[in-house]
Length: 371
Length: 260
Ligand SMILES: Nc1ncnc2c1ncn2[C@@H]1O[C@H](COP(=O)(O)OP(=O)(O)OP(=O)(O)O)[C@@H](O)[C@H]1O
Ligand SMILES: [Mg+2]
Image (cartoon, rainbow over the protein chains, first blue to last red):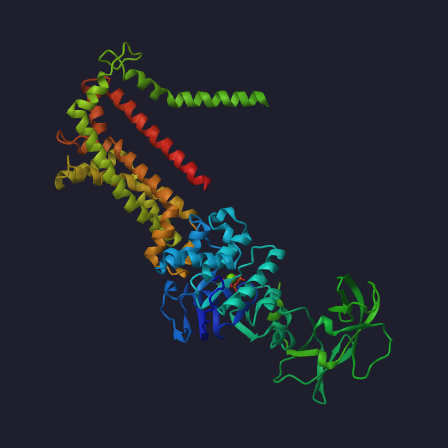
């Protein structure tokens, strides 16, 4: 029997949790509910509080205020070694004085599992990450990717209901990272364990996750599926962090309940209006735009912004353009294969419908926190 | 280029000879046919070795030193290791201060310590006792353990302890299964230093010795000033052999570990 055991994943409930280091607030009143068996990714820029959240769940740091339940029970005051949670670290953290086999057997020995049973479970875990042939090697005889697979086996061998991973692929090259992402996804599907995964790579988050929580400055900006975050970002920060986008700013007025914004002399219409009196910005996704020659036939209800091509990049699967608008904004445009070609310096019109646009309140912090 | 290599080689040889010369003089002296420490020796005899192994003055002082040094190695290693943890893991300011305080026995002149210890021991009736020697030598040995263990604690990756805790290990288990095995080389070299510190300590020993309890260095000293016979050379040769064996064993052990 080699099939890994399906274990019931644990639910996590974080309510109004804060973490302070002296006067510094690393986490501010976060609420996060993770369903049993879910793959939840904590995504955000450096210093936004992802690791802090993970450390709270793992019990490596104490919560300053708020509540944390795992599997329906409060874990306040429960030390990390009693929480029965698997953790995978960016730096692998394999024990250098133990072989791969001993490393993976370690959590089992601590739980009083010995002899054949232990051997069998170690082998099963190593099979799962395709490292069974390396059981007698020491960690310093393995590549980074191999070490991380062993670390994954070690964190899962005791069938924890919850696995935490803090940028586990951060130190690996792109090819290996993409392959391991798929492996992690497969293992998650096979086991039914709840996975909480930290990354600052939005593509990785989109590949892996059932849902994503976007962190910014110690707060959660939005929680949702990749599609929800991409199509309906709640804040400008989320809109800019997930996927590519162009942010349009300009004087705006409300006409017939729709927002009309003047961008570099061109008027564009976005459906609806913002609640409250925050000044609106418009988020435009690169693939929603069609490039046309100036003066070509207008379709009714279509928005047009004129500009000049500043950069044209052939990507194989299509082309990517950077168009300089009249107000100086650089707009990113993705043209599918077969669309008309443009060269640098060409005058073009960006065309899109009001439904292609997302209206969001302006937020200066969204610019400064992006790198 | 090859000239500078030859030159470098010759220079190294010279330094090696300089460092080894006193030792190399002692070995032939231990077989001196005359009852004198003169160099070069004349004749050949095993008599001084026999004297060392049979004369109770020599055998008891040797056993005394061995017993005391073993006690010191254990006590100083335990205390020094704990101190190293405290110093390494305290806030850096406190840690630095503690460390400076803890290594004072290494920098204070031996005589100063010896006088202080002697004065206190007279009152406490510790002069000429195994306990007295063990206590004084432990104090002298702690800094060596502290430095050796601290060096290995500083390169020890504490995140491994976090990882072990996440896998279900309580604090003691973490120490036993992860921390201890990884800093063991430091602890062992600290223990060796502690042993040697006690075994060849003479200044404090001269103060707190008594006719009933002499350590080997004290016996060597009094033998030189009284008999001046080559038994000291025989002792020196034996100690040289013993330490060489320990060091070679250590190197072989280190090489084996390094390979895995
Ligand atoms: N022990 C600590 N003492 C003081 N401040 C801390 C401590 N640990 C973390 N912080 C601060 O808390 C904030 C959040 O840190 P955290 O490690 O959670 O960020 P992160 O989102 O994981 O970032 P990264 O992507 O760089 O790992 C940071 O500003 C950090 O400087
Ligand atoms: Mg982090």
